[in-house]
Image (cartoon, one colour):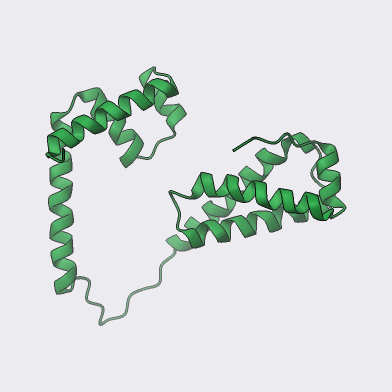
Length: 179
């Protein structure tokens, strides 16, 4: 994906509702948001986030409230972050379960037992790995920490993080016997 340099003129054309600029805006940021959220969120949630982010951003632009055109990309990104966080907060609110709710059915108990066994195997495998590799794997895939933060914490570059992850994954596969 090629990065696009936004400027005041681009934002002016959006404010004036230029069809070509609006098409570019939606196509460009649709790709950006799908890349950003595509692996972490469902397709429906990504689509909802995209539409709501566009609605909010364009409303600000149409009112002339976006002051610096070169900050458009960062602005759309922050709006999308807020939309996702709002969705998580909304989804976190739960309704009380009815009095006849059965938390574990026969099928659920078998699936739960399988999940518990898988978790035990993963923990045993992580314990056998090099401490640094295990910590990096945990930070990336379990804690889902920011990769730049992981690089700072472990004193490595992004390129070297890829190498370390590749090696760690291979050791993890070897330990699980999946090779």
